[in-house]
Image 1 (spheres, rainbow, N blue to C red):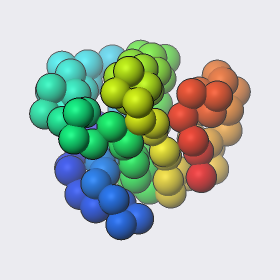
Image 2 (tube, rainbow, N blue to C red):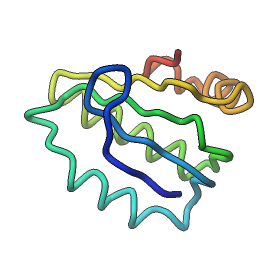
Image 3 (cartoon, rainbow, N blue to C red):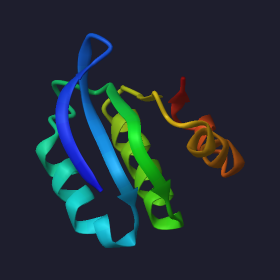
Length: 100
């Protein structure tokens, strides 16, 4: 997985790309450490270039949702390919993040 902080739909966000797997755990924790949840409690994830999520990656997205919730914010996933949206719904991630 690669990530970049960028503007997503007019708000601060994160562009994710590639395969998001267990091997990306350290990189994801780096992303969490770099994001200022106090200043930006709402996170928009642009997933247009994300091709795969394994179960660890799904768990990491739950962690992100909890961090945002603790900061009184939320996570919105945008531009996710249909297969990834289906996966997010199958594991009930869409009950913790907004999937558009």
